[in-house]
Length: 288
Ligand code: URA
Image: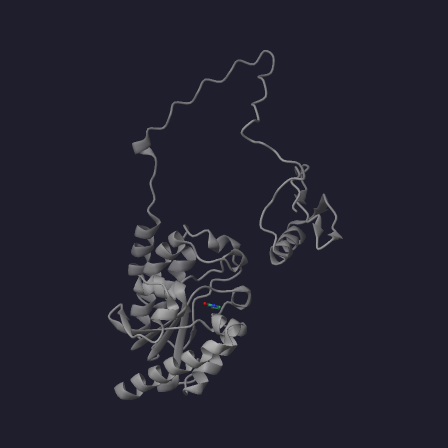
């Protein structure tokens, strides 16, 4: 549980975890900004998701304090006409920013400067890509997890290590060169909190960047891993049905595959993943 406290002047008071797994933690700890941030990050890692008080506060019932004696009530500000309020279309803005990017470095910079995706605020790093741009195969995962967020590269955790073994089994690798190299990215470049699924509006605002990423990386074949990537690029879900069925997106052949994180949880599905890898290899050999 998180405790809500009012910061005293000049101090940062962070709400402190009071009890996790039966362990008591201190409250009202005064600390500097860095210590406060580290403690908050630690709380997030522990799975804390909400800042709440010990006692419930019904904010709907809270009434404004009465005006001080002798102070005339302030005149109500005129309502801002709705038409005058600034309206921002985050998808239109990401489309414009992505289109303006002339190369991968420009696209990465455009992503870093994009102000409408709140995931950026909670992430340590922008996770843009790994591997060799211009590779024949481009792999599109879902979103960075904790390890990727820390390192700033896609697929570096356990799922990423399995992905590397899968690719190596058909002679491909992110560290290889020429025809054997691969290029890797994700639908989302920032880690969602607690590794939750990306929300539709987050996918919608990142999709123009992903499409431009594909256009600039110029692969011959796309591999989309898991439901989120299938949804984003093919507009379909149901990876169990879709996997291994060649499709098309952005003018390129696409093969949906089980996500390596799914394979870690369901090792029996590796048989199908192997069949899909062989299919990918056969396609590359035929086109070479
Ligand atoms: N899962 C993904 O989809 N992408 C990553 O980068 C890591 C895990």
